[in-house]
Image (cartoon, rainbow over all chains, first blue to last red; front, side, top):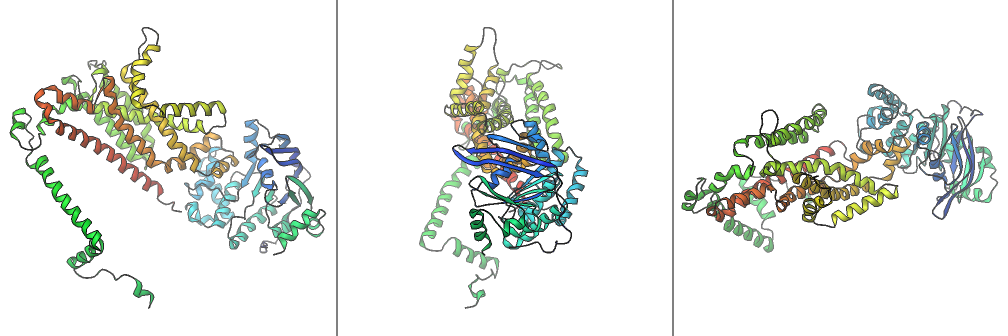
Length: 261
Length: 367
């Protein structure tokens, strides 16, 4: 598995004791299908959590409920003390602070890279265009792609597109970032450039929830690793304990499958 | 064999030599294509000369019945003599400069809007141009102020009427169709059902029926003394009808935009309308330019149906001119050819513009 070796300078700062996300007894159904079962989870500020599990285990659905891309039917989610329910104002307030990076990037193909980045600051944060452009260039430099600012997403490689997508989220200056399998759609040689950026973010103290099977990334930056199966959280532990001493049989089976090659 | 030997030889030689090579390759390769080529040439030789002979060489422009009777070819004199009746219908003869001016203004605004979309400096003037232009056109057509005599709109006719009906039809049917398409995709069951029922009912009846209902049945439901203008009713009928078709075109476009685009907008905290306007619609509408223009062209031609409720559109005024004197009646081929030429010119321009727009919007973002 690819590990972001170059950026191993500096340690990942420990999370604070303050909770930013609290999920209590949350349940979700698709029709009759029980996707998420009694999820309890609290995330501290600055904490980095990696969620893994077999496909169909509900891991993507879980992080998608955290910014209301998916609704839930039972229980409660609060983000930054804001109850995430049907209230549209609350939803928009949460989304201002929680950004999502998608498996398929979801960049806007009809806009240049720069326009992709400035869209939300201009329309949601009401930032003047000039200021938004400066902010966008700042983050494009951080993901090392500033020279592509005036190209269209379709002209970039997958890895470049995903870095643009990360920069686009950063332009909203979020407090929490959700990553939904950010490297799964990439060619193998591009995985590292995206993970490097994510590791840097982790080191700057960003609160991150990341659905991924990049176990090297999990070992390097995660404070906690969560294993999900059939809509439940099966195991939750620090990376050392999770990888070296998994408790549940299902976790052991999953790890043996994923680490065997 | 080397790689190069497989490539076709570069064209060499004189122009004549190259032409012969090209013809052999494209026109006479095999007996079937040779027959097709010779057949097509024979067909064109049979078809084209008589048309030119009839339409140009033996034709006359003399605007009198006598002059036409002498000519062996087309009698363009019919169009020449009746041009003002054909163009402006029954609009008072001395006031016909007003519809002419209104028509030129309308065409000017349309051309400036279509051509100026590309340039930000012009783009910001498009809406003010319509806001100022439409009242001027209305004043010119109706009059009654600024010393212009009042002309009831039942006297309007000809090309200005056709252009007004279709351009106002497009301007209103477009946003209405868009709202219907969004309504049909809405999460709110009531809104969705309403949109579906509307679209299916309107699509299920012919435009003639809609126009008849607007003209004959609708007034029956109004209280005594309240009347809505006949022209306005026809205009509304056309808008309602076209919007239902456009709604389905737009729905196709909306469905073609990946769900992830909307989710990306949501996760950046954009509102529903912001996401629609900035992310979804620009992509969806670009995809459906060809069928949208298709609808516009078909609607433009459908405006000729208003003749059945007693309005004289451009085709109606040609008929009017043919009936104005029994001696002209036999020149209907010339009359309808002229009408067809004008309709073709406008429809073909729309088609060309849509091709230009597609090309323009694709620039720079090749995938």
